[in-house]
Image (tube, rainbow, N blue to C red):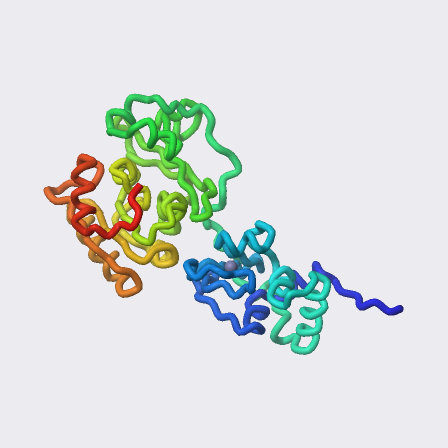
Length: 327
Ligand SMILES: [Zn+2]
């Protein structure tokens, strides 16, 4: 009996995921150099809340959907390759999916076979996940207490003074994660007046990240508060609003704007009350309207949020009374 021969590995390397999606009439939005985003097309997707849960990495030729119910219906797996994609879309086995892909690519090789050289390279400084976590972090250092950071916050954010060797020695280290919650960097805050005030790893790109995004997303709230710095984030978190992210500066990058639009519907802008902060806030409003509802919260008096008392922060936020689920 003749069996049809199919090379799974070759197919996965040769056929571009974009072509497979196009075959099913799925068109996604481009985000950055290598990522596409949009509504999940899989039959396992039942949630109407996650509007933007389907992500494709075109340089790695893989996809994922992090909607909980969709993942559950797929045995808990966040995503897969093009064979998994076709198997799910067509409701067939991986082998049948491979045969389909092979047939498509043989019928129209000019559309389905994309030479790897013509695919975009992954951005080299994409803030890849760290392969280590720092040890020798002293969570009890008095500097944190002196800045009003509670021990709960220290634990939640994994803060402490680094007593090991290297560039961050003697600094307060602040772990930074990507949207998926993977650790990608440590910022190091000087505590003895040493310059620079903050140290980031070489090649780290702040503009691709929002500090605390993964925790903010996990609250499932549709309203987010945005601040400039790490300590502003801690202050807002301690005032009872865990859905808070920081720019790590006063300017919003296009990538950061996309992240906000993907995950939230409303945003309360609480940048510093200085020239940079006011300009930043105006730019945030311009970048996010009309995709999101934007409200400006002025800290007033030249202050930044981490200089306010928790009740002042609550007073500011409550005036808008728009947070759906403060903790
Ligand atoms: Zn899905």
